[in-house]
Image 1 (cartoon, rainbow, N blue to C red):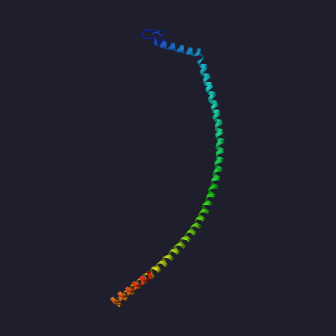
Image 2 (cartoon, rainbow, N blue to C red; image 1 turned 135 degrees about the vertical axis):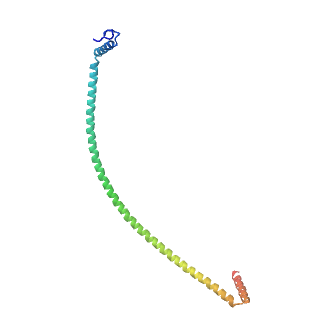
Image 3 (cartoon, rainbow, N blue to C red; image 1 turned 60 degrees about the vertical axis):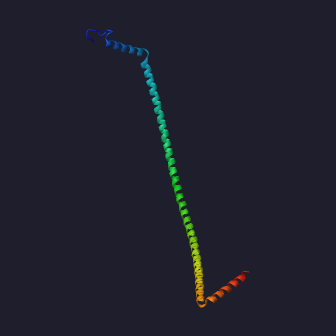
Length: 171
């Protein structure tokens, strides 16, 4: 028994006694209202729920494993298909490369022929230009020679005759 400075333990002035009494009353009320049974029932229900969730998780895990196996099979099939597609693409690329080579050879042949034609045309134009230039030089030389050999009076007379000939032909 605890006694505090002259106060008795079982006195309502003693806070320890009042707290102890309140705790005992609280426990009594809990027992009277069957709270431990309800808590145990709730815990049992929760345990049953957890067990059901675990069973469901196991079932889901097995289903997931089955799906994983299915996906792995499908992945293998897709890998085989992709390998076939890659081989077909390589074959197509090789065929396209061969076709491109043929096209390139044809194009080069056409361009070479066009270049040869341009060279021949340029040669003809150069020959014509050289002939025209030679004729111009020859005419200029002949004019100079005639001018030196003919006098001024003879040159004037020939010019007048040429003008009359041109005038007669135009009319």
